[in-house]
Image (cartoon, rainbow, N blue to C red; front, side, top):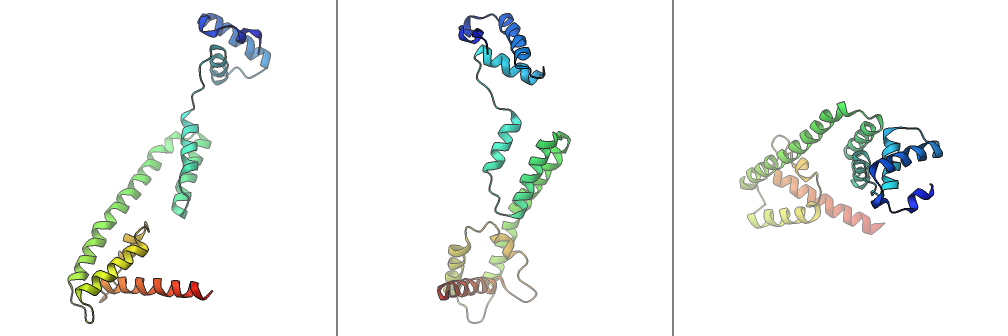
Length: 183
């Protein structure tokens, strides 16, 4: 940079800043693109650099969880869209995300409806207190599982009640705990 930057840029006229910008582009031998012009102009004028939309999206994507394959695939689609500068694919990407969110939120009413249906059904060997305790254990152990509603969805198979699924989940959890203690 020249000594031009040492002057108080707040007292410079925009035309002086523009002239110096062109000189700096030539002196630094950078490609005279609108982005480079804007960057150098802002440096000379003392205007803070604002992040681009692309950089803000990439930063947000880096902070998202990648715990499941679906999450990783969705993030990869965004990264590909940004890398290819393919904004025509944006509506499809947003639509897929919205569809997944709606599908996920629709799972809970079905799961709760099935749970209540099974709860009200008479089951030999299970009273209301045992059902309640079983449900509480399942919620304590699996309540933070984002796929909990999906686990109820394919169940029950023909002739099987959801409460038996709860008991199976509880038994599986006890078996896993016992197995981990043995190791």
